[in-house]
Amino acid sequence: MQPITIGTKGIANIKADESQLAVTVGSGSLPVFATPMMSALMEKAACKAIESFLEDDETTVGTVLNITHDAATPKGMEVTAEAEITGVSGREISFNVTAYDEAGQIGSGTHKRFMVNEKRFLEKASKRGDK
Image (cartoon, rainbow, N blue to C red; front, side, top):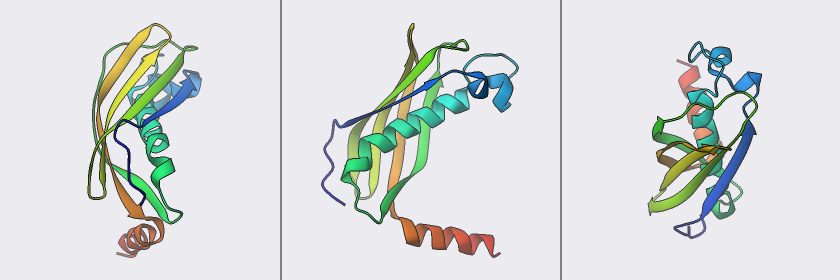
């Protein structure tokens, strides 16, 4: 792992199309951008923020996501998530995450990811499947 710079940001975008709606993904009955899709977008932004600090055999896995979804985004709008690295404790990286659409902020919170060796992590996960 390379030294991680606090304040580094990552951004991810998506269009709120049919596949991103609450009614489609099963998180509600309305045709608005789904909370699980906002969560995934926030995690994607966090991955982008940390990617330049990782070695070839390293990746990160999400461990904590504490967010609010404060405004509904209708189908067709662009949604952007931003993650900013706020802390590092050993292999744990902390982020502030925010999401917004073309009209303004729609959600925010905190996120933590843990740096792992990809091969060892997958081997451990595979062993769980053997039980």
